[in-house]
Amino acid sequence: MLERRAAPLRERAVEEIRASIVRGELLPGSRITEKSIEQRLGVSRTVVREALRQLESERLIRIHPGVGPMVTELTADDARQLYEVRAALEAAAARLAARHGDEAHVRALRAAFDRIPDEAPPSLDELLAIKGDFYAALIAASRNPIIGEQLANVQARISQLRAVTLSAPDRQTAMRAELGAVVDAIARGDADAAYDLSIAHVMAASAIALDHLGARMEAFA
Image (cartoon, rainbow, N blue to C red; front, side):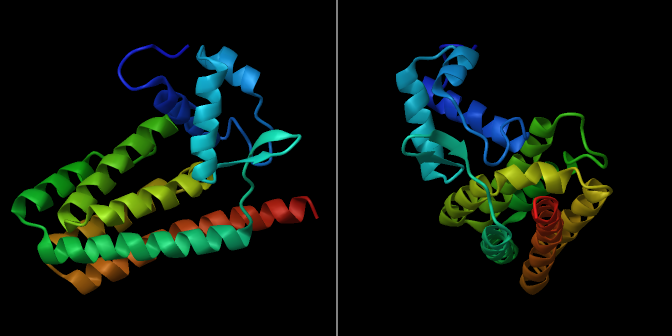
């Protein structure tokens, strides 16, 4: 049951439902019943409906007339387009960070990177929080919070695939190496390298996600 303090109940309900989608507890195409969410979170139907409208605006769910809310199913084309946008945004942030980030920004970025473990932690939520801190430091170094706002929207829409990409064999080691190279490029002020390395990092995740979606489509063919 959600505690009735700190963040407003609606925001906390949004966070809980979104986390269930990211962890794969609510599968793509599955129906979400308002009553089950009410009982699970211990909140009113009004709060649940407000949370679901927020998640619909993020396109994580779709509310179908006569059916109700369902977890959005991403097609391979949806995923490809979203990863392309994510790559462009992350790369732009990295290039700006290399150009405009000062020593304090670089120290904060490296500190955030150092918290990324060599091996995947037992909790996906923990890893996502650590990576969230890294991206917050990257956006701060870029001095362009609008990129951060747009990136957060894209990340929300592909969140259901992050459990797939982050749990792929050897992905944690490769991901850390990729981001480490980005940080090094930013630290030495190499904007072009920071941009290119960021593109490569996101495209590596994209390839895993698209392989997963392709395999899922074949299974249902």
